[in-house]
Length: 239
Image (tube, rainbow, N blue to C red):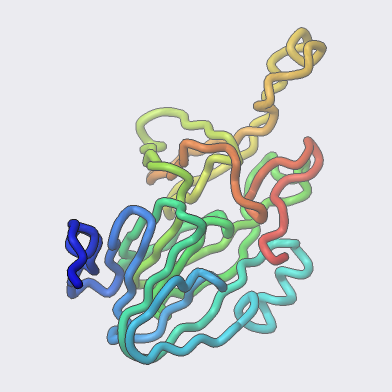
């Protein structure tokens, strides 16, 4: 019997030599011949060859203790072997970048995968207004290698040096090295508060040199840096 149609031609695997290669906007192929990688626990959708997975929790004793103390963390698995690994996260769009001795600060809920050569840690964001929120924490990725993050929809990269930049905390995905962040409280005025407020009480204010990546959605997955209340910000990454 013969199957007719373009299904197996239109959606067949895209051959490439890149270590991290998008098969489409929502599916990433990682070539394991380039070495071990870290991937979000549960993100594997398929693999070909001999790929092995080790559950590392939040990535070591130090990070586990920090996650327990701060309420932040990201469950990662260590992937090794040979072949091709395919990862995704609930059909979210995937953005791939290559860091060359550089660093980014990422919402832990958006981390999908990165090269084992990338160092990562949970870090406290130094922001003047962060004390009123109970503290802000992100995942710091630094070094040389590939990084893949997820976004809800196609993001926009804003150049913070071009103009004062503000964003909803639930929409911010990451920012690059050289960018500073403060917390801005915008009540919308007394009349607005009486009417129930604007829903934009806590905002992230960015300055310095670099980019902030914002997604077209304020529904950050559980574990992102969303504002739970004026006195509580950022849900736990480690559930």
